[in-house]
Length: 427
Image (cartoon, rainbow, N blue to C red; front, side):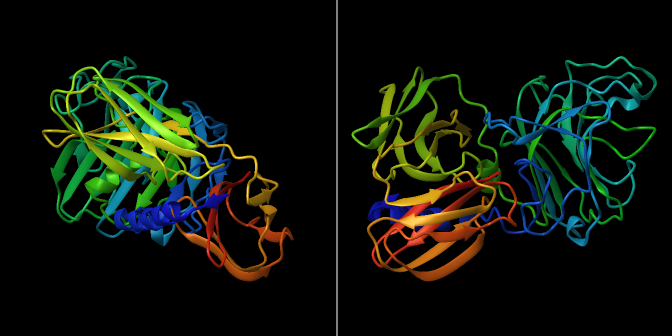
């Protein structure tokens, strides 16, 4: 895939922006669930037990999330030093609740490190009906399915702090942060609960569990789908929360958003029914549709109801994901649905075959002989392979990534005067 100077500049901007939001800084465990329950952070916190079922993620990608049946499905990760942040941490997870636990106390455990509540050093991500109802939930099987709230350590979302309440079969992006003093809880990028509890520790000797509390009396089985679990040893900032949660609730005023190919460029069009209170629109682009969105340009709202933006830096044969960041006058950010587009070119300069692969492939560069530098980058922006060599026109260069986790990677090829980028997949 040939990338001219504008795309080269964009790649510099992409990695610079990625560094600024630092989504890989302090990341001690990352579970993208791309075909397995391995830790993609490079820290080796892999699951030792998993009987959950692979299913589609919040983008519809097959075998990219795990379904928990609410009865006996869970994932277990052994205790490790990195999973015990001493005084600061962040948790992020996408969940789609599909049912509510009816056992004692009605807890629904998304993740928990600690085998019982109130033990020193515990951390948790959970939802239940306890914040709303006045009944003794530990002595009744009657579950209030209408008034369920998410919460984590020292950061609740009780009424009226969180409305509307949890809906079944709906995806949510949940983020908990603790900076050494304050615990904050975000739902779809919006701060819903905060509490000051200085001196909280997250050090304990227990294993980490997804989908249940490790207790026979209070198992709190999770019924639903889980994806993109991240654990940090620091408190991520508000900008990083927005980057991790692209599904923030969309204002009802946006009536359409489309991405179309016109004259080998990608043109975005959107319509607004009512622009009152909207300051501007920022077009953002991603290679994955997950957390690597970067801004392409900003358009000031002008009460004209119909807008367009042309991405003239898009390269051929590359999947792109687009969304709108909508800034309101009061400072609140909302996001549009994500749209995809790809410019198809018949004569592709760089070829990777097979793609997808099981980690072993070859790379060919047509029409070029000389020095070339090959760099492979994973989904959190880390360089996992880098090699310089001399290539001969159309001769294969072996690409061996069989030891890497399943998922999406990017291959950047630099020749004497050009750069190429190709998305590669390992299954």
